Length: 207
Image (cartoon, rainbow, N blue to C red; front, top):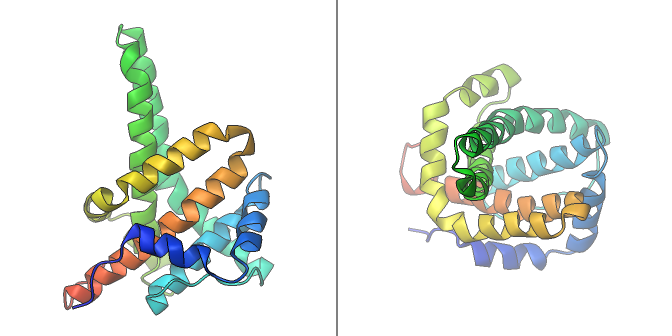
């Protein structure tokens, strides 16, 4: 049976891909601009789709901008449910803790929320790729408990990577677009290959 993918190995393959820095730079720059950043979202969605189909690291070219925009809207839907809303809830909870005298816990809680949201996003993206129609994929997206179980299984293997991504985003906040795209792309590639490996290792199991 094929071994489970390792994040450091996947990252090395990504960095050795022809034109990788140009692709990362385009995505990072597009991520700065509201609405236009949907194109960067769409590229990440396309990466997830192609890696799921082929089972290997694939970084498509920046082509079919209209298709990228449509895919970006789909990515934004998953991002809203499984990244933005959970993190918003955590930040509200942190504010409440500060009001009742537990403000020292707020930074740790917010970091935990960012880490959990990133893992939830990866699980949601993979689940959202099962079908050809948007309606069926949205129905899959509503299977919250399944997606949470997927995220729980993924979490141990990507903890260091997510911590690094959160740290990178914090350090380079003025360049948040670059930090966002540079850190999220390898995380999405790895998680997609990890979930596909689970499907192949467990015959008949579909995530």
